[in-house]
Length: 54
Image 1 (spheres, rainbow, N blue to C red):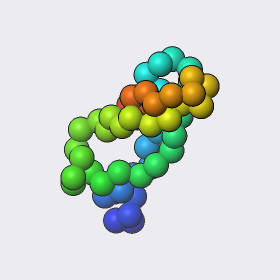
Image 2: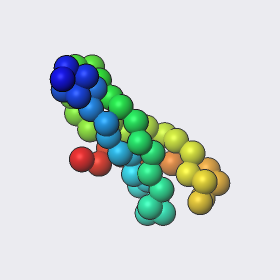
Image 3: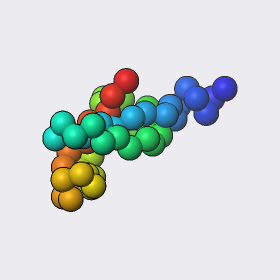
Image 4: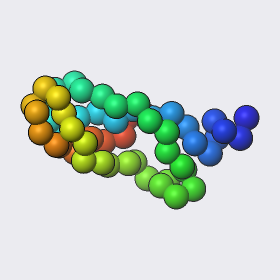
């Protein structure tokens, strides 16, 4: 029960509009806001920002 509350599963969607997603977990206590990470987009073959989608 505590696992789902503190570390929920989130989707990270590419801001480049390619539709690429990553699935991960995040700690709500450390990152209460939406997460933004620079990750590799295989369709563009470069790193772009991925934003948390709820």
